[in-house]
Image 1 (spheres, helix red, strand yellow):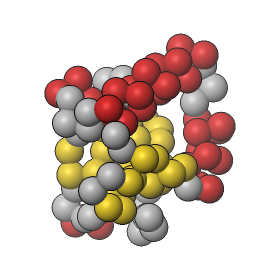
Image 2 (tube, one colour):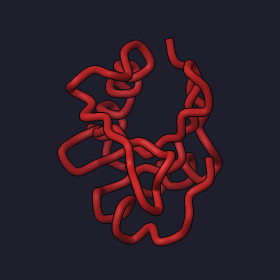
Image 3 (tube, rainbow, N blue to C red):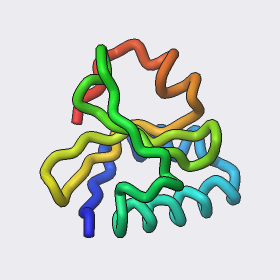
Length: 97
């Protein structure tokens, strides 16, 4: 099972961006799935290159993503959450694990 750490910026962005009850429930379901099997195809997990090299993402919905860093084989840090536009395009700064 994967251990998950929520970074300070992740918690702040989650509160600000994920306000709908459906999305909160969907996040809980997907996080549970991720902790038990991070390679489940339903998560659409993928790695990044370029500016986000070293980070990975999984999907909450078709448009909502969670960005994370693999700290060790059994531990990850969630670093960002939001729509595709919020986490990929508007996030010009370098993320930190």
